[in-house]
Image (cartoon, rainbow, N blue to C red; front, side):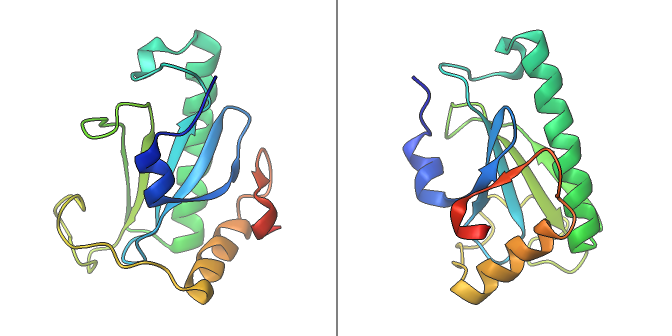
Amino acid sequence: MYSLHPQLVNDGIWVGDFELSTLLLINDMQYPWFVLVPRREDVTEVFQLEQADRQQLLDESCWLAEALKDSFSAHKINIAALGNMVSQLHVHHIVRYRGDPAWPAPVWGKLPAVAYNDEQLSECVQRLKSVLTTNFTYAEQFK
């Protein structure tokens, strides 16, 4: 049975679901940082997904990246599936700006996370909702 890794549960806020993947927002207001987690059991690598799921994950990643680029006016979208700390397959989508606190380096380990307050969280998800309007179901708290 599929379940989210405890670290993803701890670090992420459930935003909603695509057909294949759960979408989390990493609770660090320094960067709009989202994670796609395919709802498949015992999968640690993209190549372990069935062909149809690989294509669906790529589609979802592209839909998300385009929505993030548009809604957050990103200079760059960093997309990565590392899995060094959390082996469950998950794909990071991080909005980057030339002036962000870690630019141009990767965000990992640069600064301690700064949690969203309720207003910031609502604004972040609302920006996404303005462009991610199809192929996605928002969690009840964001409807």
